[in-house]
Image 1 (cartoon, one colour):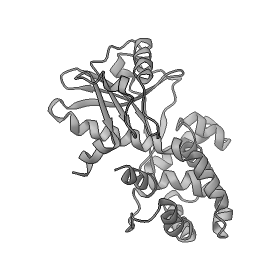
Image 2 (cartoon, rainbow, N blue to C red):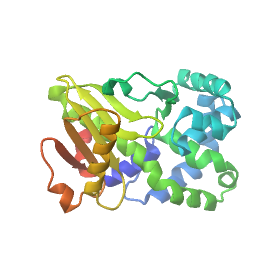
Image 3 (cartoon, rainbow, N blue to C red):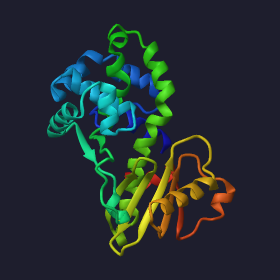
Image 4 (cartoon, rainbow, N blue to C red):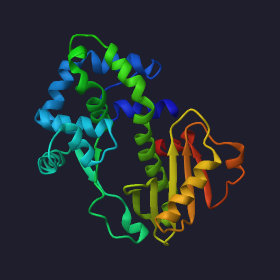
Length: 269
C-alpha cells in the first residue's frame, strides 16, 4: 500500500500503464522526464501556457498552498493572482479550498487565505518538480530534478496522504456519514483532518507520512490545538505511514483511532 500511495502521488490522473515492479524514479524518468516535450504540449493545452498562471501553480505546488503565498512566490498582486486562479478553476486544473471554520462554530476569517487544490496529483507533481527546472530536463539532464525531488519528496507526499485519509474516513464512517469535512487552518494553527458526522460528532485528526513511528506527543499537540480553537472532539484519528509508539498504541480506543498506510486498502476495495 505504501508503494501504491507513492506512485499515485506522482502519476495520479495520468492515463498510462505502469510497471510497479520498477523503482519510482526509473518510472519518472521514463514516463515523465523523457516525455517532457509531449507532456508539456498536453499540459499547456490545459492551462493555456501563460507564464503567470504557471508561476502561481508552481508556488502552490511547492508551498503551503495558500493563495497569498503562491501569489507572493509568483510576484503578482492579490487581484491579478485571483483573476488567474479563477481562470484555472474554470479550466478544471485547480479548486479553491476553505478552512472548515464553521465546524468549530466560528465565522470564517477574511484574513485566512484559501488554499489551492490541484484536481490531479500529476499536475501538482509537474508544477512542483518539472516545470520550474524545465531547461535541464528538456536537454536530457536530470540532475537538478533528482536533487529537488530528494529534498522535497517527504513534504510533498504528506498532502496526498491527507487527502487519501479523508477519503478513507468518508467510507469508514458511512453508518454515521460525514456531512462536513476538510481541514482547519488559521494564522497559527493547522489541523490535517476535521469533520462532523450526521449525529453531530466532531472528528479531528493528524497525518504523518514519515518513516518513523508517530508518538504520543502528537495526540497532546492535537488536543492543545483543539482547546485553542474552542472545540471538544469526540474522536481523534491518526494516520501514520510506519505505525505508532507503544505509548500511543496503549491509548487506542473508540475515541482514539489509529490507522496506517495499510488501512487505506479499503479505498482499493
